[in-house]
Length: 90
Image (cartoon, rainbow, N blue to C red; front, top):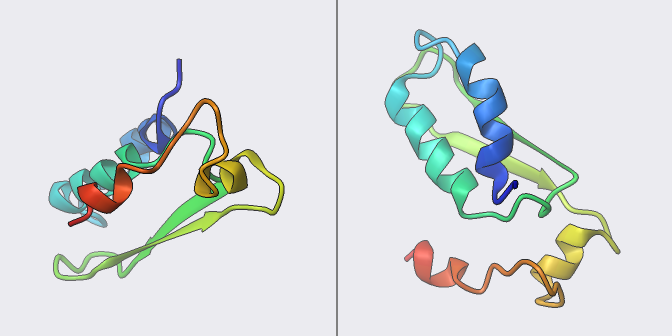
């Protein structure tokens, strides 16, 4: 059963070269992915300056009107919620 975006990330993680994105940054991305339900986005991605240990990482999510993700954000999904998110990011 798929629970969070971490399930998506786990597929690509073995392909991430440590010389481009170090383990600490990968671990941070994994923690962020774990906060969001699997169906939140139709697509998502990360962007970061490669090979720079001090670079920040941007995250983009595509959530279309009328999608499962839109229902989750609106608090209208019977199977997923992000209500906990405001507490988790504090």
